[in-house]
Structure formats: structure tokens, C-alpha cells
Length: 260
Ligand SMILES: Nc1ncnc2c1ncn2[C@@H]1O[C@H](COP(=O)(O)OP(=O)(O)OP(=O)(O)O)[C@@H](O)[C@H]1O
Ligand SMILES: [Mg+2]
Image (cartoon, rainbow, N blue to C red; front, side):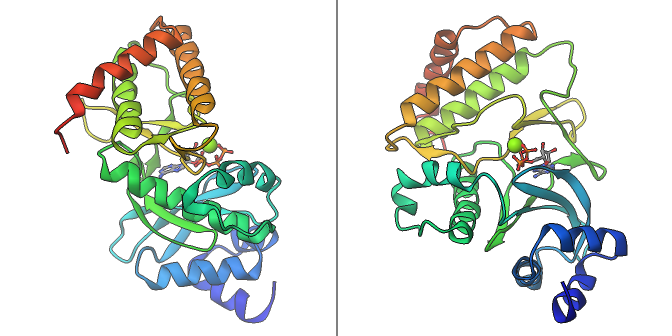
């Protein structure tokens, strides 16, 4: 990285060491994408990475008014783009994606944004999406006083039944109102948000791979999700089989009819 891109990055990452790391992980076009999104006023500084995975780095960002945002930046050199193609191919929204790394990752980012927006519009609890540009996605920061919420996996609770109920409701909203199947649902992609005193909530994240129910593998993905979730809750004391979970999701169908 050199010249203009480096100068541009200085506006968004204050710490020199972090800037160096960023320059190693991301290319110049990603810096320009950060710039394009920041220009819309969504955020002004990338403060630090909350999480750094194989496919993406999630930053805590802050906007000009001091509000926290989460900015997820997908790596172009990701090793996951072949598996991304599987989830894009059967989706009528993304059938014209060129089979090239950069295009796939951009489409994936757009898909995560579209899924977040769709899920949000039916009242499922996901981070509010704010915008995206190429491989950069900005969304609501889930956390309390600037500390990002933990995943369900990392959260130790006495009682998990409320989380189970909330999850069944959210799965039902996705399925019946948005016609979306999450397709990678697990205790790792659910945050437990304790921001509101006495009223913790679960928030579904990492929804890029979610597919419409018309996807040829939607049913298979749905059954895998139900097995994963039932197994997890059984381990933490809410004993449920996948079939019982499906019944609990179905029970929401009527309740949701006529609501938002
Ligand atoms: N909106 C958000 N608010 C707060 N923290 C978030 C948000 N989105 C993601 N995170 C944090 O970043 C982590 C990784 O996010 P996510 O699962 O979307 O990315 P990923 O690329 O799948 O990473 P991984 O491979 O580690 O699962 C989450 O476990 C969570 O700790
Ligand atoms: Mg994840």
C-alpha cells in the first residue's frame, strides 16, 4: 500500500500499527470502499477490530456524533468464495454473478445487506443495516457501553428458555414473513444483547448465507439449522429435538399472521 490509499486510510484508522495490519489484510480498493461508505456519513473512524475471522474483519466504528457502528469488511482473498458461490447460485436475486473472486465477494456483501434489510423489515431481530459498498458493510453495533455483545456460545446463563423462545419466534419470522432460511444457524451466529436492563434479547448475525425458501437446498439447510439449534439447547438444558423445535416454530405461524 502506498501513496493516496495510505493517505486516505489515515482518515479512518488513527493508529499507525492498526493501519499497517489493515494494509496487509486489505487491498487499495477496499480502502476506497471504506472511504465511499464513510462519505455517506455512516461512520467516520474505524476504531479497532472486534473480530478477525477467515472471511471478514468486523470493526467497531464511530460516527461523527459518537455513536458506535459495526463495520464488516470481507477479505477479497478469502478462502471461502467457492462455498459462497453455492449459496448465491440458487438465489434468483443473485443469479447473474460472475464466477470471479472479487465479484463473488461483492455479491456476498450485497446479499448480507439484502438479507439484513429483509429480516429487519419483517421484525426479525438482526442488526439494522446502514449501507454497503463493494466488500464493506455497515450496520448497527450490538453491545452495551461500547462493549460488543457476546455470542450465545460464550454467554453463560442460568436459564436459556427465554433465548429458545425468542429464537423460535425469530426463525418463524424469517421463514413465514421473509421466506428466508438462515442456513448457518448456530450458537456462534447469535449474540446475546444485554443493553436494555432486565430485558436481554438475542440478535441473529452473519446472515449472508441465508437463502430464499425457493433455493433448491433451502429444505436441507433448514433441517440442518433445526438440528444444530435443538442440539445446542439440549446441551444447555432446554431439551428439544429438531422436530419439537419445528413444531415450536410452526406454532408461531398463526400468531404472526396479520401482524407487522
Ligand atoms: N453488528 C455487530 N455488533 C457487534 N458485534 C458484532 C456485530 N457483527 C459481528 N460482530 C462480532 O464479530 C464476530 C464475527 O462476526 P460474523 O459472524 O458476522 O463474521 P464471520 O466472518 O462469520 O466471522 P467468524 O468466521 O468469526 O464467524 C461476531 O461473533 C461478533 O463478536
Ligand atoms: Mg460467523
